[in-house]
Every structure is written in C-alpha cells, then in structure tokens.
Image 1 (cartoon, rainbow, N blue to C red):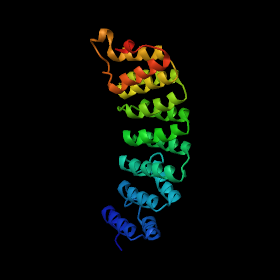
Image 2 (image 1 turned 45 degrees about the horizontal axis):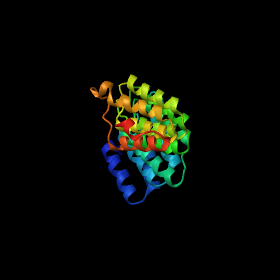
Image 3 (image 1 turned 120 degrees about the vertical axis):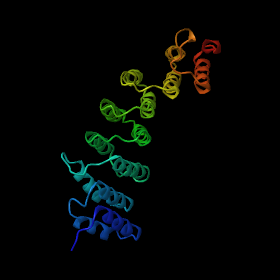
Image 4 (image 1 turned 180 degrees about the vertical axis):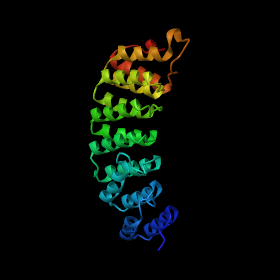
Length: 248
C-alpha cells in the first residue's frame, strides 16, 4: 500500500476536520511516515486540534517541531496558528499560562521564527494587563536581540504597561533600546510616555519629551506631535498647575 504524499495528507486531514472527525484525523496523522509529516501537514493537524480544544495533543505535535535539529521546523504559519489561538483561549478561559507562552516565543525564536507585529503586540498587551511587565520585558528583549523586530507597536504595548506601573526609568530605557536597534519610535510611542508622565504629575519631564519630539528650535523634528499629543500635554499642564502657552 502506497503512502500518501504530503499534499494528499493535507487534503485528508482537512476533510476529516470539516466532518468533525478529529479522532480519525489524529489517528491518520499518527500513521503517516516521518517524511509525509512535513511542516505544512503538522500545521494543519495543530490547527485542527486547537480548534477542537485538544490543546495538549496540539502541543505534543508542536514540541516535536521545536526539538533541536528537527527535520520539519515551525514557520511563520505555525506561529500564527498557535499564538492566535492562545490569545482566544486566554480571553475566554485562561488555559495557557503566561510563562508558558513566553517560553514558546523564545523557542520559536531559536528556530528563527518571530511573531508578526500584530500578534506580538496583542500578546504583550494581554500579559501587561496582569501587570507582569518583567516577563514581557524579557520576551521583547529576546526578540529585539535576535534582530527580529522592526515595528514600534510591540514596544508601545510594553510602554503602556510600564507606564501604568510608574516604571518611568524602564520606559526611557526601552526607548533608548529601540533607537539602538533601529526601531523607530513613532508619535504613539512618545504620546504614551507623555500621557503617563502627565497622569502622575511629572509635567517637566513630559515637556522635555515634547521638546525632543519637535527637535532643536523646531527645525528638525524627530516625530511631529499630533493633536492627541498636544491635547494630552495641555490637559496635563492644566491639572498640574502649568500654563497652556508652555506647549504652544
């Protein structure tokens, strides 16, 4: 009896999945030879298992892909499947522990797979809501050091979490790290910093950040402040006893 090709295996697993025959799909997958079970086939069975709530079974397949020297390693599609499902699970049931998610991000990184900026930002925001910014810092630092991040959005999510905990030194450290790694801060980055400085009455520091955005003598702007940034600073000045003309 001939063994199915990887393409045929994918079609079979998808048909069984659409029919709700998850046990049969898993049994078929276990019978495929190692060469048939390539990355694409494994992605399909992981997706099917996660959608049917078979988290442990899905992680067993994933663990094989993450082993050092694995023949069929995870790719960007694997990461999207796994972490998008983790986000949904944690919103509804909280079934995946944060440190386990962080560990998986690192393991994917070891295989040169970095989460897309949207998913990474959502994961960081989720963990920051539980105020576990130290864990997020370690995750993001690992991603940055692997040169796997060029988008400011994940950093902005961590900045928000740090701001809520008044960790202003870490906020400034993160912005410096972004610049060192050529991750360009944007108006949202500086807006987050100004917003939290104003909330905790650090008006002079907020004005300093605003001045840096405009550049020396307003000739060379690092990032042009937008209306939200202006309004945030004006509100902070009013509440902190400053004058509106200070940010004109």
